Length: 422
Image 1 (cartoon, rainbow, N blue to C red):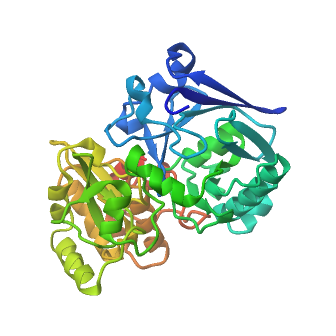
Image 2: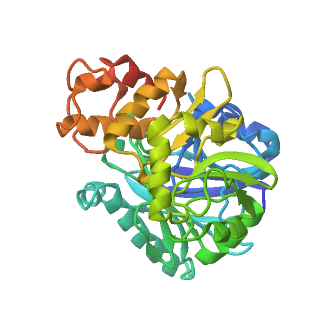
């Protein structure tokens, strides 16, 4: 299975069909893969997980894939390096097409070498959203996964991911998806949401899916052990893991100049390659003195100290954490990635960071979190609209925390440019 097939999920009012097709079947997957794999600007990054989603302009399919350790881009010629990197499913690109009858949860699993299986379950979307937004949808999806597994005689499906849509996905253009891991059959707290919007909108509005559950019969520890061979696998590290444990688990070396046992930025070198700047606030813990020292270094220069540690690869763009800002320098292949869970940037720092990005010629490609944080601050009266280039406060968005349509930001060229890159 590893890297040899792709999973095609076909939705219809009658249910769901799963087909496994050879990766070499270029004709079948042309519309889903050829048009955008390899184009970094078409990559939709899911935070805190190995998954990236590629949406194809003008096509009806949605493809989910994982980026391998060796490539900075997803190439059709090297599809062994992409796929759903989850034990029990193998490394299989996942293509979703069609539409179900109403808001539903798709549960996908595979046991051993058995064929992949999928089941659709309708849900009361409004009731789930009323029970906590995307978190309510994720909770219902996890419960359905347990019911489906028990009914299929697959009660051992204990680990995986729940990707759940939030309220903005119902009608907005930039609805996000919350990613929550399943561990030992229990839903963990949401670990993050899409840094770039529209994935949730596409999943719900086009396919009718309120949530996607990818389940495995392997324990969580197996996912960690496999990551050493599959490449860096972010989002599954236990809080408090030391740098040495992290290095051993992933078979990597942490850049000692940037981090040594800390809850902050890690410059990863995977298998001898400069992996660039990756973030995972759940990985390791910083001593108080180290955290304050690093916070001071970040605040003194904000962007500059980080640029020096990223290197010259576009692969430095983080797929492993909620991003505040992620971009490439207009004049050089320099990346920038910052995570809100770092705990070293205040709201004022974020305002300055947004300004500094543009001043340095950084074209943000994943600025959803910066936009949301700034606008939430304006709504709360904590940030003056003029401080971020707005002539007046934009209309309040009904769902706090959701990224708003770019049309609401048109009065600010700087912020509008960030939103346009979502």
